[in-house]
Amino acid sequence: MTDIVSGAVPGAVSEPIDYADMRRRVKAIFIGSIGNLVEWYDFYVYAAFQLYFAPAFFPGSDPVIQQRDAAFFFWAGFVVRPLGGWLFGFLADRYGRRGALMASVLLMCFGSLMIAVLPTYASIGAAAPLLLGFARIVQGLSLGGEYGTSATYLSEIADPKRRGFYSSFQYVTLIGGQLAAILVLLVLQKLFLTEAEIKDWGWRIPFVIGALLAIVAAIMRSELQETPAFEEARKRTPATNSLQALMAHPREVLLVVGLTLGGTCAFYTFTVYMQTFLKLSVGLDADTTTVVVAGSLLFAVLLQPIYGFVSDHIGRRPVLTWFGVCGVVFTYALLAGIQATKSAYAAWCLISFAWVIVAGYTSINAIVKAELFPTRIRATGVGLPYSLTVSIFGGTAPLIALQFKSMGHETWFYWYLTACILFSLVIYSTMRDTKLDSAMERHE
Image (cartoon, rainbow, N blue to C red):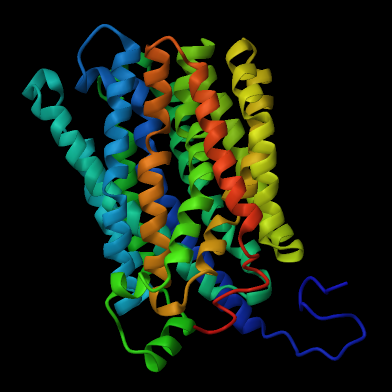
């Protein structure tokens, strides 16, 4: 059995542990992950407070239509994520991971601050939702760059034997960002403001908090060191046109699209859409909905490093296949069960069971993508095709679900999600296991 700390086989001669190097890696992963948490908090706080501020920007009497319109503008942030993935991927691959990480979090700060001070429809009419859409586009550019750059940074700074475990903290903080947004909502609901006050002006508070946290994250990221892998590649390989270089790896690009498609649909269903689903389809009140979603997200956070650790020992493909098979078999039943129950505890149990499945994707998808590409195009290779897939399939999941609901065919979405996961399962079953055959190990 491999020693957990040193990675050595008992009885064999092993190299002494370099604790200084370990501390350096852990500190870098912590700072990179905290910045990631802040970015995703800023992006997800829109979804957490959507139930409250939608009437301020989208007038009307039908709450389903209001939430659908708000979901459309949530998706607006996804439309430009491919552009952000390319732009920040280019910066990270050409000039370094550290600078791109700082720039992305500062751009997110601007978008959050803009939403915090936006006038409502009652004040400036149709310009209000248009400005809201522009702010979401700014945030989408930032987040499109954040994913690929942070995934690349975490994978390159991690101990090669534990890349799955360390890289899983990207989704620990990604989900943690949404959990933080939900917890801010819960604190405001329970301790400080009435529901009417949150609808009137309290929804602005979390966006102000997000902008301030983004400034702190940028300061922390200024202390990051560049990854050794990037420094070595910059000396060894001249910089190239990122898109042209990426086109030399068409199979890897298509693999990123295929392995992302089903997972991103499932992820946004059980995170972003679930709060709206519990309120409009299950009938839970706002406070109970917040508690159920927060509890399920906390459970999801705990699962990520466990699955990442498992992938370091049995490989990436079996973990992805677990998600694919169980997702195809159980998705319809889980969503139908959540819709049918009127119990908050039963809803939490069903959503948590869904996370036992979905964590097979979320925990390791970033490291799998990073292991597909050589160093000089890794950030672009991870960020651009991923962001494109998320913008088409992940960001539209709440919108599609609400559209089916408004048509009176809510269960059609359950089949749609199942089909998306089935598509990715085909990819998982045919792709190479990147733990055993990684571009990172070939020092490309």
